[in-house]
Amino acid sequence: MTSDSVESTPSFEGPDLAAGVASGSLPDGGLLLGHFAGEQVLLVRQGTKVLATGAACSHYGASLAKGLVVGETIRCPLHHASFCLRDGRALTPPALEAIPTFVVEEHAGRVVVRGKSPPSPPRLLTLQSSSVRFVILGGGAAGHAAAETLRAEGFEGELTLLSAELDLPSDRPNLSKDYLAGHASEEWLPLRPRKFFEEHRIRLSLGKRATSLDVARRRIVMEDGTEHAFSKLLLATGAAPVKLTVPGADLPHVHYLRSTADSRGIIASLPHAKRAVVVGASFIGLEVAAALRARGIEVHVVAPESLPLARVLGDELGTMVRAVHEERGVNFHLGHALRSIQRTNVTLDDGQSLAADLVVAGVGVRPELGLAEQAGLALDRGVLVNRYLQTSCPDIFAAGDIARWPDPASGDHIRIEHWVVAERQGQVAARNMLGRGEPCDLIPFFWSRHYDVSIRYVGHAERWDEVVIDGDVQHRNCRVGFRQNGRELAVATVNRDLDSLHAEVAMENERLRLGVMS
Image 1 (cartoon, rainbow, N blue to C red):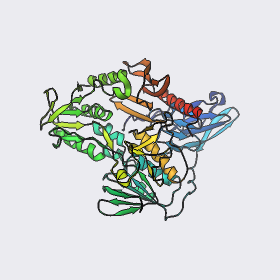
Image 2: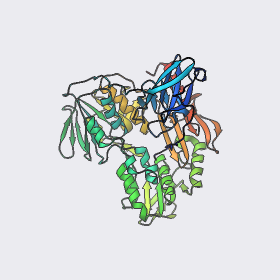
Image 3: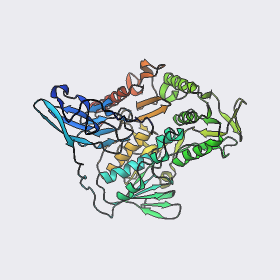
Image 4: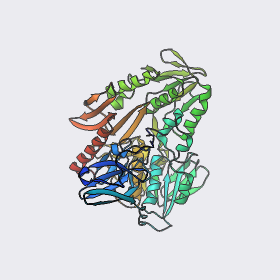
């Protein structure tokens, strides 16, 4: 199992679609869940045509019957992946795989599924010259999504993915959730097996760090002296954890969590740990706290703020998140900072001592800007890019945690550290490396899970003057809108998954009305 996963059931819901259903049971825009030949199938009517797809999201298996049909797409209620209803293609991350589609016939007042559709033919090649060399620097969400997209869009040139991590590109959100909690095996983590990269002729260079970027010569130089020439380059170097600077911060039981190796290291320390101190009430810090509690570790969270996550989610949801964790036995020490770390305890700024066999710091990250700065690219608390994710050097693109991009909604340049945003930017950057001219006009989205409580957040609100709550935050069923000057900038939901999808679509429609979305 993986984060927010949905367990399968041997029974089937809805009618047998081989026998068919009455045409009148499926109005225009209507969605009906049934089954065919041992699979759950969705029927969707669009005018005079009825389309049929598989009913499970290819990401974590969520029921698409609980999702939302938007035009010729259907969106997953959990993590907002979208699929084409006509051919099943995964259109937006975090889903990577297509869902099946089915042949449908309608006559004599009945809709009948006849069989599974054949796979879609490969897309036409766009660039066939093997002398064209694209290099992607970074094996995280943006880099991996870009590599897959380039091949899916028909790029036939040389493609190299360089990553400083030894592990294959991995499902990073799982590192602080089910994998760390012991609910998912390490086999779940790679986004693709090594064979996938071989079959798609994506050259992987793992465990080697780039030391310089020569823009004039179009070369990436690695720490072992090897060079990688490029026609176009995507910088997707991500971010690194902010390190603690207090005395004792270099002790072996002090950990950070960013990579698979980091999560693996924390897990390896658990047989000898009974009490943990988590430094920082960030999303990562609190997800780590939840994972450690699932393993029976006593957990204390130390952070300077008065409420966890209030800066992003507001006081009401911050209070709810604190209550959720306290119900599971987490001890909060808010309004405090570490003074020092010892081998068996930590000391707070008020002199209080907390026993600690394990310390995990989640106090934020910093974008990895060293190469971009050395190369002379334009920077502003990130790598500055235009709406096509091009840097100040037109053949070099940037995506993910390092990119500061123009937000169509506000007109400001923003930098967002979310997994799905990085994946979607990787897709946009890849298509623009192929000359597509596609603006990056995505609506930011992220999710965070705390035990059995999941929060979904769409939009972006760095500040707000009004919080509008529909539902009951205390009972964990609510929609929370963050507004500035009467305009809704972001929406957080708890147990209101369909509301989250509707909020996303409303934001997209607003941008279309304003003419700032392609």
